[in-house]
Image: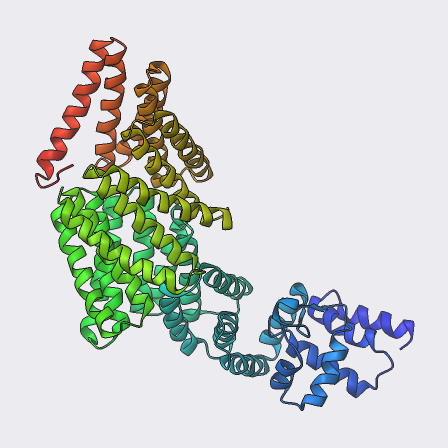
Length: 562
């Protein structure tokens, strides 16, 4: 091929990235006969369908012989837009991302039937493999070849993976789905379920408070395409967002919608175990927001529904690790509300069930970071109820397990805000039991670690009310140990920080009983240090504020032991 022909070829591409990518086949092999150059261009376009390919994948895509595929694969490897992809094997390569996406979009727009055929062939190839990477490729290409059927398949895959998959696999799925959404190649139900999967992965990383607009748009789209299950899931996501923002009343409305739809679906087909599981989770979310509002009796009833359903499912199929995990979570919710009612023995029994299940799962697959995190939280809950009973040595041992696991997870992925938050809480719990045992210097160091992490998280996302609340708790803990060491001015400064945050949160939503209780506690702490400084009038005023709030809460729910 002469220089003038090469120039003409590039000019004909007119800056179109897909045409420029295809032109590399002609430029790299100018001596090939025109028919073979055309076949190479077709092979390059087909190879761009998959995230990576080798000779076997190429053979399945083009339905050619192994020898023909070997020749084409060798030539493709010499193109400037093709690069090695060692993560999938020695001979695996991929079309460079910018070129791959351009070629996919061009095929989808100009040769739609061929694009779908190639996507279906790719999905069929990866359907043969059980690995997480292959499952991601399979669903990615199914969404392009048969979007409505694939939407239901993605729904089932996400439900299965939500309880059992490693976090890195769910995040890889979200990355692949984000690419599909970003390139505009999926619509209707496929777009709804892809968007939900992406959002729930972000929620799992505790980016919840930032998902408000996404949750609303997903819910509206789910209604437009008349997918009740997706609408229910979007309502649940919206409830999580609103609760993270501290809007408990609005969160309760969203969770109630989630529960109503889940109940209708479960009654419509009682044999559908997935819908039964969804109903259980809906009860747990309603219970969580009720407990946050201080409505412990109603919360306990909701958690009992969750536990009853999950117990039936887990007994029905003991090998289902996802249901075992959900059962552990149901026990922990019941334990939380029992502890809040001062039923410490019953709470400990519930937490023991949670811990036993999560220990089995974590031993079954020690590499599953999600299960490790759940095991850490189970140790934390057990430590809390042991400390409430005055069993400080046992509580300390439980908190040490919580801290050790949380530290490993946080070091494994420093960008995961949820794991960072667990590490902060673990340090606070460690400090609390050390303080109770009179080890004040060690307690102060532990509280300082928790405070530093909580401050970083609160600055990272000021809209996350939960992280603001964690910061207030950390300041209170630091203040308490400083006061115990006689450092009254420093303690007063720490308590003042906690009081300022607690006041802002309580004003944001006066119906949030937990925040009202935090505000009362903050006033009490300020009052205590003022009294120690001999500022009795100021101390009396602070205690009066605390008393007024506490009286209001106690009258609101006489069953609440706190």
